[in-house]
Length: 547
Figure (cartoon, helix red, strand yellow):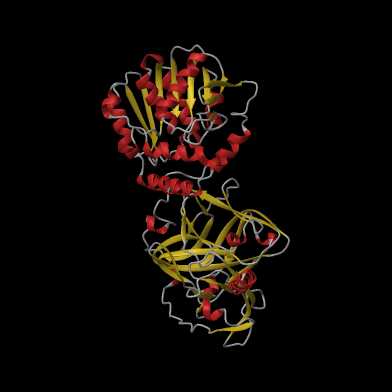
C-alpha cells in the first residue's frame, strides 16, 4: 500500500509539471512571429517567443480553467484554456493579422505645433533598473507612463532617458501605446509591433530617441506609453526616474499597478493643434502625481554628497541619549543657530547654508534620530515633541541656554514644538515649509504617503522600519492648534514657496496666529527652497537674525 501511494504521488507530480513548447506563426504569411508574449491572464509569469517564434511555457500548478493568452501588436489576440493548451506539446499557434482601419487624417499642417510631454529628468540618482539576473519575472514585466492630450495629436518620437547602459549584446525592447481603462493601461492601440534592438551608440547625450512618425500614431484623451524588455542579456540598463511621479507596472499578464515612488523618464515629441489648451491635462500621470510641487533635485543631492557635510570627522560628534545616538556637527562661532533638516534628510541638506551662516553664527547641524547618522533603537512611533526634546538635550550638553532654530519641513515642525515646550530657551525661529497639522499638506502628497505606507507595510522589511515611522509621523502629526500658535512669543519668520506642498492658506494661517511672526512666500518656489533658492534664503535668515 505504501508503494502504491508513492507511485500515485509521482504520477500526480508528473501531471502537474506541464511545460508546453511550440511555435507562433502568422496565418496570413505562414512565417514565424518573433517575440510574442505567452502567459496566463492575471498571472505574473510567462515567456516570450524567440526570434523564430519558438517558445516553452511552464503551466505547472495553474488553474486549468484560466485563459492562456498570446498577444502581439498587429495580430488578433489568441486565447485558450490552460486545460486545452496542456493537451498538445510541440504545437503550432497561428495568429491572424488584424485588418488595419486606415482613417483619413484631415488636419492642415499650418495648425500643428511641436510639444514635448512626459518625464524629462536625466538624473543618475533615482533610477528604474533593468537587471535580468535579479528576477526573471520582474525583468519580463512592463512599465508605462500616463499622458493626456486635450486635442488630437500625432506622436513623432518617444524618448527614453538612460543613465547607464551595460550589455554584452543589443538589448531587445518593445514599445506599446495603450488606451485608458479605469485609470490604468487598457488595450494596445498599435496596429503593428514596435521592437528595437538598443545598443550603446544609439544613446545620444543620455537619451534614446525612437522615431515613430511613420507609424502614424494619433492619440486624444488619456493614453499610456509602455516599454518592455524581451530578451535576457548580460548587464544592466538604468533608466532615469522622477520622484513624486506616478508610473504603472505589471508582471506579464498580471494586473497593472501604480508605481507611486518614482516613474521612468519617458517623454514624447508630438504634433498638436496649436489651438489646444495648454492645461494640466497635457502632462503625464494624475492621481498622487506631485510634479509642480516637488521638482527634480538630484543635482543638489549630488552636490550635497560631495560637500563633506554630514561626514566631517574633525567637527562631528555624538550625543548618547536613551534609545538614540544623536549625530551633530558644529561650524563657526557666535550666537548659536540650530539647523534642522526635513523628513528622511540629513545634515548635508544644508550644504548651501552652513558655509554662509557659520561666518556670523555658531551653526549646529543635527541628524534627527533615525535619520542620517543618528540611530534610534526603540520601537516607538516617532513624534515631533520627541525630536524637540532631543534638541533641548543637545543644547544642554553644549551648555547653550538660549538658541535660534532654522527648520526645514519636519525641522520647522520640530522648531514649533520646541517653541511651545521650551519658550524660555528659544530666541528666534525660522520655519521653511512647515505645517501645524496634517490637513495643511497638499492632498496629493497625503495620497502619495498613504500609498507609500501601504507598500512598506506589505513589504514589512525590518530594514525599512525607520522609513515606515518617518512616513507615519507625516500622516499623523503634528497637532498644533491655533490656540497653541498664539502662545508663541518668540520672533518667528515663516517661509514657504508659492508651489509648496504646504497649502499657502495654511502657511498664512500660521503667520497670522503667531503674535510676532513675519511671513514670506517665495515666488516660483517649491518645497525645496534651501536647495533651489539658497542665496535668497541665506540673506533672509541673516537679515531676520540680525534684527
